[in-house]
Length: 516
Image 1: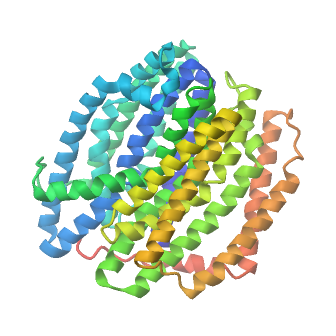
Image 2: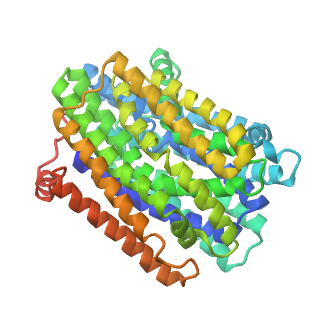
Image 3: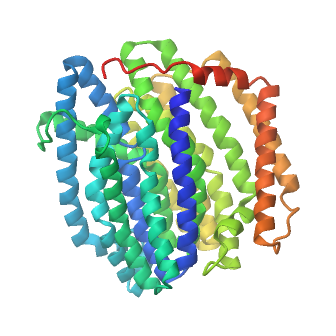
């Protein structure tokens, strides 16, 4: 499980790093203001769709359903089921894309009411419509990735999203070199989003392991209706962080540049959340589905305990690091071109508050698979809805008094509300299985992360804000490297992790898929 987790995490890390490069270039190309707010509001809508469909979200429904069909009726029936899912998803998304294109002015008005009556609304509508072809490719990509994950083949699905960012980076580079007008640049970049989705689909189809043995067929029979009744709630719940950002954007749209500040701050949250959260959703769902289906309580306890340790061990130091180093990180990554010092300061403040919700986001990713494995997608959906309502209610008040910073705090509070709902419901319904090893290690992980955070805080002010870019880069790199080294050493000293045991575990042969 840990080897699969590392495979997915590595692919996600590479994708997120390219995402940073992409967003840094977007900041330089568009800066902040009306054009940037319009493009990023539209792009945020696409990001929600990406999370609804990809990055492990569809695993919540597809993998348990596919595994049950295969175990009950065999490989051929499972392949036929996958072909029906793929065909039905593709046809449905094409129809939905047409409807969304027609209703786009209303949709943008709902998610960004502050744009109403301004030129920014028109810009956002045009950008969003140009991005819509991505939906036609995202559906097949998601189903193929889910089937590969169900078979325990994570490498291809982990690294295929790189093409999305590579295509956008190439387009931005051309636009920067050509000194394109901001509005034209935003539209051309929006059109590239669909091309990026096509490249990802072609990459998966070129792989033999991703091809289906049966033809595609779209239908809405009882089996498909039952599948979608489970899939839709799980997909919405799995994209909880993006819904919370949408909640923030709804309120932030009334404040100039606030949508942009929140977007760039959230991109930094997406790095650890993607590395931990996406890997949790991708690897844990098939692992827990097999364990719950076989009635193996020890296997369930082992999977849930290791997931909680990994989630805490990676999310907590990331949270402290982002809070302490928010200002230098934002200045280094985004403060150039049209993105100025005032934008950096506002984005850093938003980042500090968003980071407080990171442990809750990761906890949700670690807890939700326990429900999905038991064929329950409604509980995570209700928890997500509760967090959305909490975020909106607080953002109305805090956004009025504190602007983007208050909205960021509201988003973090919404995440905490969702996590607490899942924890309370799971404890009541079936009880989360945490073994003795996890109960011993978790407090030590918290201690090690706290010491690391203190070290970063002591060294945070050593580099002057006006220092040259290269000096800032080296200083920040040394701080992060020192923090990681101290944290790793403390984990070893406290007996939480052993490098030798980790290496030996990674050398063991992976458990083969029982049928594939």
